[in-house]
Length: 188
Image (cartoon, rainbow, N blue to C red; front, side, top):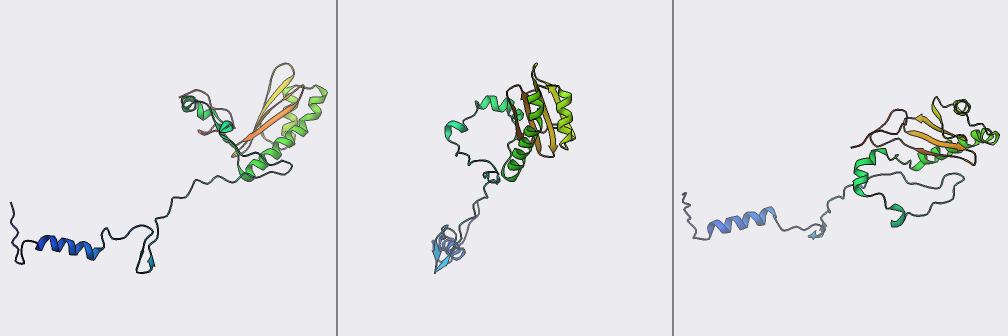
């Protein structure tokens, strides 16, 4: 055991520790308080994740604000096992570009749909005529054609043309990636 010899009395060591704490200010400042008229800055909050703001695109009416009922998703276990298959949504200007591309595709396929021409080869010719190079078309029942277009590094266009209508959607690929916008296969 080490002995400490004090010359100033039995309270010398505690007094020195107290003096050291007073000098260093340990424990004397509080976040957001002021000392002698000088403001003490609060620690900076970490930045929130940035998602480009969605805004109405040309020709689109404002979208309603999502509610709890519209944002509730599948059970957590399902998402854990299948979330990699859920397309990544587009936001901001990329969403507007995707909507414009889908509209262009629908307008181009409409004459073919009205003629009742549901041949995948004809649809492919129409879509490549729009300037898309990576186009996949397939038969979707007797009166339907499906299509998938890899339109850019983060723009995928997918839809169907049937006897009643042509529909499509734009998205940014898949969370774990895929080749030419193909939906990933398998599971976790």
